[in-house]
Figure 1 (tube, rainbow, N blue to C red):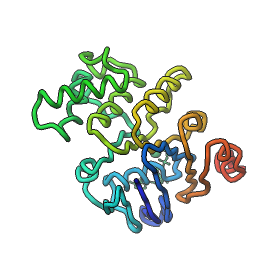
Figure 2: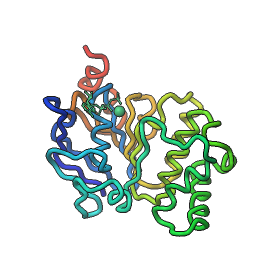
Figure 3: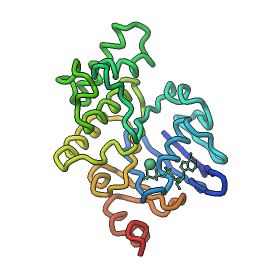
Figure 4: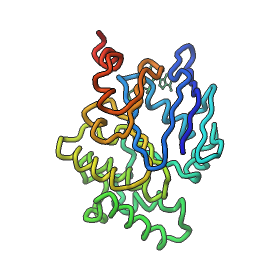
Length: 231
Ligand SMILES: Nc1ncnc2c1ncn2[C@@H]1O[C@H](COP(=O)(O)OP(=O)(O)OP(=O)(O)O)[C@@H](O)[C@H]1O
Ligand SMILES: [Mg+2]
């Protein structure tokens, strides 16, 4: 479904992504992990059109989306959340999600109906008319997820949507994500979060892909342990 080949992104002399290959299959949940500065957010920004890649190719369902504009990529079926929460604090939860729903709906009424569906799918229905800024950060992150869901994507890329949650909140979020039944590419640096969620895990370190495999194998991979512990 998503097929990234040899994606390379430089910032001056720094190679933030060095020829990264990565695929995501239909309804597959792929975790992308790595220590701070590994290049995870950069990789996301290249896929979703926020940054231009220097080399490589981004293919999605047979289409070439390399260096296309963010709105073209969103329309093609890839939605994203941001590492730093971007909600309109003074707007209600549902209105925050309506913003995403307008990608597929022309009328306000249609967009609102689609937004309510997205709130239901993400467990936010009860907070629909609350001001977004009044919710705890864990739920503000959920609003971003709902906004992405309202775009009716085939793939959602999530940047640290699960970081900073309590254990109970994490379990709930994992259930919500699994229940969406779309393909997910999930960025985290907390392995405890990514392991129960992912079908497959890809590990970046200092811009390079250093490992890939099922969560259990990744957790005991010496290269991964070394990257995290710096030993
Ligand atoms: N716009 C930019 N200009 C210059 N350097 C950048 C830019 N964005 C990121 N970098 C550098 O690229 C490298 C990768 O950063 P990136 O944000 O992709 O890492 P990350 O894996 O998402 O880290 P974190 O876990 O802290 O979010 C870092 O060394 C970072 O300082
Ligand atoms: Mg990041």
